[in-house]
Image (cartoon, rainbow, N blue to C red):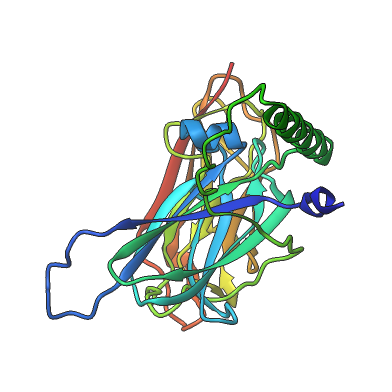
Length: 294
């Protein structure tokens, strides 16, 4: 019955690589974390990362309470980290319409960051169905039994010893995510660190919600309704509603009408109309321009 324990889990593998020497030899040694997200195991072997945003969070400490970083990228690196225990949590993604969707198999994993090393955490979102795991296990058992019989009869040579298995672990699925700040390195004023759809991308959906990932949490009344401006080369001014999602630290603009096929959409976030939990307002603007497929 052991294979059935794998049902509902994602595969998370941890490996390590050496970091280059720090520019200041007298500084205390630090480590880094690189996160890579793949759809299937075959994609990981081919280094094909997912093409859609996945909401990832990295926490520090044995209890995993201090938020160190949050990202929507399929791959990202957090540098200059003190050695210790960290935890990666992945629970949600953004679909082709810009909607935030809970992953069917959310997961998390704790690991150690070592000074002078980059800890690479590879995540595979789609598990292998339990049926095929059982079939594979039974097939391997049958082949082993046949090999033993063949060896005892003298029909087969003894096989060489098997190499050690790579370090693979299956995370325990969790149902939610934890909000909070960006940790000690958070900027004093809110900024946009990522956006979906990405600049220059092409979207298939006729109505796509645009999502900005913010660098820090906002105050309870920390954004103005007109903070987002959307225009299209065919539609002109695009009406919609903006909403702040504190758990995910996202500002989301939902258009009230469909886009025209083939037009370019530009969505701009006025950071001066955002206020962080420390009371500071942002400066400048963040923008993305994407094309609607014909």
